[in-house]
Image: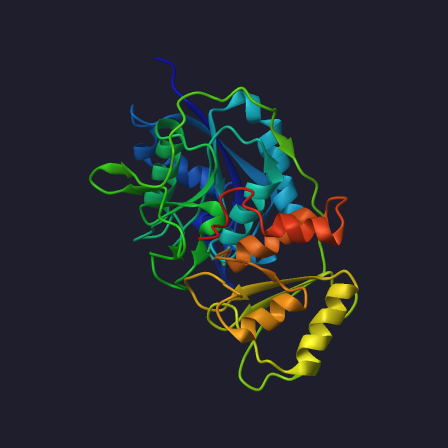
Length: 339
Ligand SMILES: NC(=O)C[C@H](N)C(=O)O
């Protein structure tokens, strides 16, 4: 039987880092060399894989939309030659990249799994081996044709994941959507759908993305209107408000006027909840309803990462503000559920 072939893109991040006088840093060649010294990766049950280290290996705090595009184009270039893709990435902004890739890779019909680790692969007690080994195995044997994120034995939908623990191994959560798959003694499919063959639909397409001026403001009791007005002023094209509960904000006339003026200027204002779990419902309370009346749109149950990367994706296309508002409230890649 022909073995499946998996393409591994190493972008940087802790998994391939080495100790230096300044703390852990990514080092060229080190991840590949470490994997080669681990016989588990070459067991008969494992797929074939090839690791491609990027010329510039980065801590994921340095990720930008240009890097998202670089990864998406790399996948596109190698799309025909591999059965699946594993992106090795730092954990700090992993959920942003996984969300961004889910939007940029249009008509995706192969598995793309983003993973990394909290302790470098070469260190004692690393979680890197379990994460990478499982990501490779799942990409080959449990192909779910979407962008997902594997961490601590759970496979999440990429645009539903968020970093939830700074220093624990259970570093990611998917607060509003069940895991696609859980890897225990048995590998159990949960919300994911296995696809045995490549769907012969539209060819894979990579959407262009350019960095966009987007503000994110978290409401707090007593926040001044001028703070929000500043965050919404030009050149900002979109403002994400992390509101209270199901989407509430103070019913201050000056605040509501500021938001209305920003909307009239063509800004996209999205209402996301600052709660870890749950969904915005602006019809729930008068305080939420007032926002809706001023043109603020609902982020429903999207994570901040999904909201922000979806805005980047849409603002990079030739769409009107009205079209962007409509698309933001539509489920494009499983990132949003309305009820
Ligand atoms: N665990 C990690 O990968 C953290 C690292 N700072 C990164 O995001 O690149």
